[in-house]
Image 1 (tube, rainbow, N blue to C red):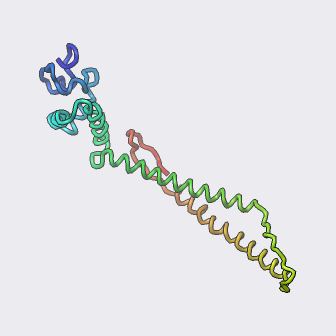
Image 2: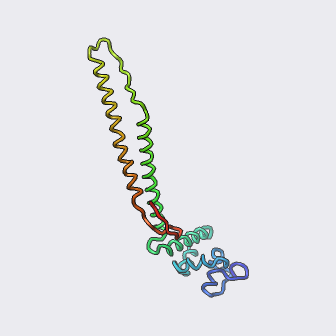
Image 3: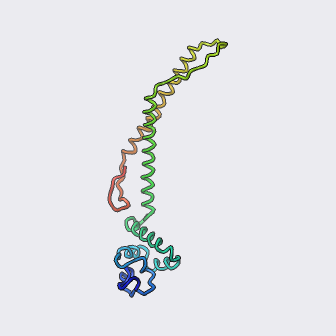
Length: 182
């Protein structure tokens, strides 16, 4: 028998005698029958056996772990399996990155609104006979105007924040529980 006196989960489910060199015994113990049952349901015992036989012994445990994970994902989402879970998580990451960018833009806008407008000092050349007061006033107006226009561009990011929160996507999470994603 594969592991001790009782047959492994595979042999138990398939109702066959568990041989001493059973390929399933090290990876599907009798005390966890669900693990093999789900892998068998999705991939089939003979396919799993072939896969394990083609792998070096040191890679088999990782392969079984991957098969169990994919089988569970396929049961929850028969069409996309793990790819569906990955896509769902990537979508969440993208939404969170967008929300972070909006929040950073709003912080920048708030910081800029709180900073006083300071014109940069100009060096006056005594040989230059231009009206410096007029140039300074013109610079101050231009500087103020540019500064005041900036928040309206940043407010676009603020208004797009509402778009992020306005829709909700109801989807079964990767753990099988319905949740709301916004």
